Image (cartoon, rainbow, N blue to C red; front, side):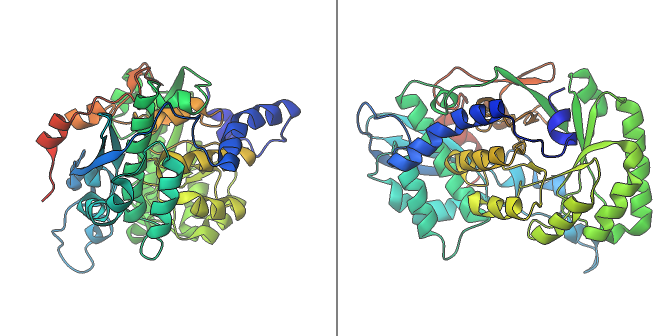
Length: 418
């Protein structure tokens, strides 16, 4: 399976052939950066004349409990993520041009992100040429430094950036993946995130990730229950499927190391986000101490600057950026190149989405795509931005832009702004 070598091996020596392949994949990016051009010379100029943001929750907030707390010590207080996080806070940015080309980009941060776009980022877009996506990204990032850099501001910028790339693909009548140099694979193995094991097995997933709801505040009894649950999961899915877990940032370093020891019989391929994303040095400690289980992180990191720290401190084995949150395509393709230089795999969060899959298919060091929409409650918004899935694999689109099926009418129908 495509999962095993990147996950279970330490950093291999880079062969001459690998260096040549890496050089070929990164060279266009380096040349574009050096010349100041993000794309081949355009056939003409476009002018943005419309920016609109739709607040479009794709999954309910109730996935992470509710704000109805029993006391100040209620465990739900550590699990309630509110209206701006994850897919409960998803937004779609619509950018239109005078020439009649419209692009749609998915971001995060809910109504807070919509406010940032409407009150600030829009200033850089109206009247600008969307084909100059690198320039616009740098201007928006620089202008928000005093209050942004991470979190909701970058989630907002991500939605704008993806809408610009959607325009660029439609303008050139090309799938976005072709603008990245073309796919290096026609399809990619997927892993399922969730608890419906029967669905995952029936759907052909070769790898399964289980969310773990218990952490430090559940004590040793929680440890034992997690251990017991995962042993049952391993027994049900068999030895041939890869098994991973997501600790949802609820552990600390000692707790993580003890859990990794307890879970040796489970044979985890990777452990995702055991610590707070801010505890980079703690991640470095865990990475030094862990054995065969790889440590995955980056879903809640932002821009190349954050990922550079993770790489510098050797605080991660697998990077998991979300293109709709962590900086958009403009920034995350840089992160993929940085990881390739370190022989590290990148498995984007929600990589099966129409927005992430083109980068996954175009990047040699992206071996897997996480499930998106597949196996989740049926939802016309999720369906519109999902990729074709068959027997455990995701397939790219040959439609111009990101290949989604979003329309203004669909977004107006599902808009929760205001």
